[in-house]
Amino acid sequence: MFNGTMFQYFHWYIPNDGSLWNQVKEDAEHLARLGVNSVWLPPFYKGKEGANASGYDVYDLFDLGEFDQKFSLRTKYGTKQELLDAIRALHEKGIHVYADIVLNHKGGGDETERIWVKRVDEANRNQFTSDPFEIDAYTKFTFPGRQGKYSDFIWDHTCFTGVDYAADLEETAIFSILNEYGEDWEEVIDTEKGNYDYLMFCDVEFRNPAVREELKKWGAWLMQETGIDGVRIDAVKHISPKFYNEWLDHMRSIKSDLFAVGEYWAPGELPLLLKYIEATEGRMSLFDASLHHALYHASLKGKDFDLSTIFNDSLVAAKPELAVTVVDNHDTQPLQSLEAPVENWFKPHAYALILLREGGYPCIFYPDLYGAHYVDKGKDGNDHEIFLDKCAHLEQLMEARHLFAYGLQRDYFDHPNCVGWTREGVDDHPNSGCAILLSNSEDGFKSMEVGQRHSGKTFIDYLGNHQAAVIINEAGWGEFQVPAGSVSVWVEKK
Image 1: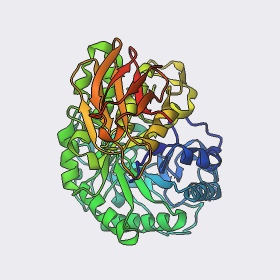
Image 2: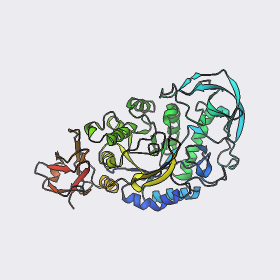
Image 3: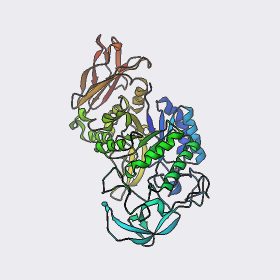
């Protein structure tokens, strides 16, 4: 038995100096010591902004920092060789590598084409606001810097459902492309904006069989070239589940244990997540957006939030085996479009809730372990300087998951301001077993059972937030305490 912990090794504002892959390489041993078993890396490939691109503006999937394209050889994070060296270093420490893949759209086309389109109502993508007409659009991707190495596939307007810029008109809008696959959008699960197939740039047409075959070819190439162990799939709510069923089946025909987690960001919309899981027949896990927003609101409301409801309508409660739990990520950090950062005081609570329980696959966010500092424009158009502090006790909480959080779980979610649970421990992990108590208000205490295997043992607070000791009675119970607005993780004194 092993408690897996994923680590998101980036945030949106990582410096554009090409140093990240080297940093990952140097940090592999430290991550392994903390019990990290997988690292989610940012997009490997060249974006339309070259060395300044996050990778979510994907230009060339086959350029991992190898070709002089978009005014740069390296990506934002480094060169292809530095990437391969980082992956090798992680593998040597027994850490799996998950690649962030963005297949929904492409940006930075090399040539324009004269194409037929209809203008679309942005608020309701099923509503067209014009008759068919022609525009010049950057829908042709020839990748001149790569010159056909790895793939000679040329992307043109038949590979896309829509674009957001008419070059001849110098107009930014949403234009539906009229092609042989239909005048409408692809069928997706989400009904937001009528149909949320279109997100940005040149939206990929997955009904085109040539596109599907090229993306399957690329996926197989990426696994062979880099040795990745899994994928984090961007923007799955904007893509038909039928495509990923086909694509993942192909990938797993080559690597049967390939891990996959999809980003379907729909806070408070658990039925949509479950509907997507049903449509993909459990082929991928999903991030628990609902739990993230519960953590966010709990951090804002303080003692007015009922902690006993924290898991209500969460994916980890409904489908724990397919839930990847997060406290924050690059989209929720300050100044991003989905900004909803958990307040610092509550982050130890939030990480205890995802790290020390049996359900879900927890993912740690880079700034919470290392901190971050950046400047960017806010919604008001002004520059804002942001300092993200490290999460207090995070390394200890990660260690506690690795060392102690095993075995039968007993829940004590019976008070709005003080909740707890215990893990009984298992024989395979000596000294395992723990009792966790959270308060979002005043000092709290709770009598909880850790199991008769711990009878007579002395438990102490691993985080050092409470200085007293607890003696477990003959029946396996102890009375545990937690300071006001804090977290205590009680483990056997050794």
